[in-house]
Amino acid sequence: MNDSMAARPAPLVTVTMTVNGRSVTRSVEPRTHLIDFLRNELDLTGSHLGCEHGVCGACTVRVDGDIVRGCLVLAVQLEGARVETIEGISASGEITDLQEAFVRRNALQCGYCTPGMLMCAAEFLRTRPSADREAIRDFISGNYCRCTGYHAIVDAIAETVEARRSAKGRGGHR
Amino acid sequence: MKFAPFDYVCTRSLAEVYDLIEARGPDARILAGGQSLLTTLALRLSEPSVLLDIGGLQELRFIEERNGAIHVGALTRHCELETSPLIAARLPLIAQAMPHVAHAAIRNRGTIGGSLSLADPAAELPACMLALDAAIVLASRDGERRVRAEAFFKGLYHTDVRPGELLVRVEITPLEKEWRFHFAEFSRRRGDYAMVGLAAAARGPGPLPEELRLAFLGCGDRPVRAREAERVASGSASAPRAERYSALRRALEKDLEPQSDPNASSETRMHLAAVLADRAIEALSG
Ligand SMILES: Cc1cc2nc3c(=O)[nH]c(=O)nc-3n(C[C@H](O)[C@H](O)[C@H](O)COP(=O)(O)OP(=O)(O)OC[C@H]3O[C@@H](n4cnc5c(N)ncnc54)[C@H](O)[C@@H]3O)c2cc1C
Ligand code: FES
Ligand code: FES
Image (cartoon, rainbow over all chains, first blue to last red; front, side, top):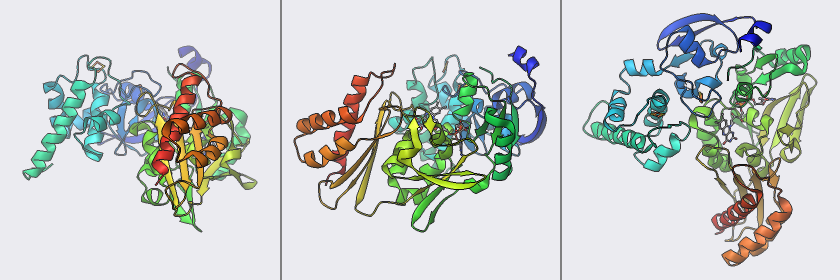
């Protein structure tokens, strides 16, 4: 990688985006994908790289409110975009209940897939909350976990859907 | 893997794209959603010298009705097709197919123009274009030309797009009211490319389809209309299930040339294709 970089450097491109509510400007090589940008330029190491070619979901982050594969987006494509990472949605409290359910249900072992899995589950909770296990499995099918066997992850998501639903029923703010 | 280095241009207009394609030659690649192109770069299957990002060209991002046809701009994202009320109402086959296209995170960026230009034989949208007899509109500095879906897909990852051309939109005239639609596929997991899939349409106010279109994916080097099976199916719709499967299977042997790969043998694919055809006829009858 360093060889070809030395052999054929591409001009740097300056990009400005909002990451977890903070505006950041950096000059990067065009080939820098969003996860390397977050990890290497901004020290946000919660977003992980597994396969680095689109199949495992470890790199799931939000761009302009929707989840994407961070390894399949170039930083330079994100001029003016709003990026949210696991650090951002943990700090905001948006998924505290989901994270607690993951711990309670043992939905993580090594934890490598967990940030991406949480980003994906958060999208499910936001866009189509259903405690139906098949629907949950369909939605998270693009996020690999090599440890848990998924059952506990489905448990945790289903439990959070139910909990939010009954909180709403009782007039809670969710 | 990390991508090999490339230059990047965020283009502002179609005219600029045409200029750059001319100036940078065949090493320039269009970047739309990037959900296939960036995977091929990550696998180092290709090393273009410059990516021409068309993602910001808002004039290519629309779903609208014009003169009775539905026009879909090339940069329309999969998630937009999936949730569009106009698509659900006028092109329900596409609405049925979209949840099978990859995963939500990929549908949030992947575009119809990218999917059709890539022409993966296992992709859902190309087969839908075939079943709906869509016109694919290609543009270059010299103007636009329209190509019917069946002539557009020419082989494995091979289309009728010529150097200097861009896919700008598709135009689909919705079939009349008495048509019904059915999309189904077999894949190892939800969101994976299908082993075999079928986009089907049937016409007829009565219980049995009078006219049938069967467009298969994953059964050859491109999406395929199974014309022999379409003919046989109209005659065997009321036959007992086992008999109908056999008739469809014999016809499909003439229509399709499925390949073997680690996902499924050609024999398995042929069987699954007949099962899908049989189920489609069941679903589309009465
Ligand atoms: C894990 C994974 C699973 C997937 N599963 C499926 C699936 O089940 N079904 C499915 O259909 N797809 C699947 N895809 C592919 C996905 O749908 C892609 O989004 C789509 O095929 C390409 O669209 P894009 O906009 O991302 O195109 P890009 O990746 O940007 O481009 C693809 C190719 O088309 C060219 N191109 C793009 N737009 C144009 C244009 N307007 N004119 C001319 N050329 C153009 C590019 O130069 C490039 O060669 C999957 C992808 C991944 C990573
Ligand atoms: S690292 Fe992005 S999908 Fe695997
Ligand atoms: S907990 Fe180890 S990969 Fe999911």
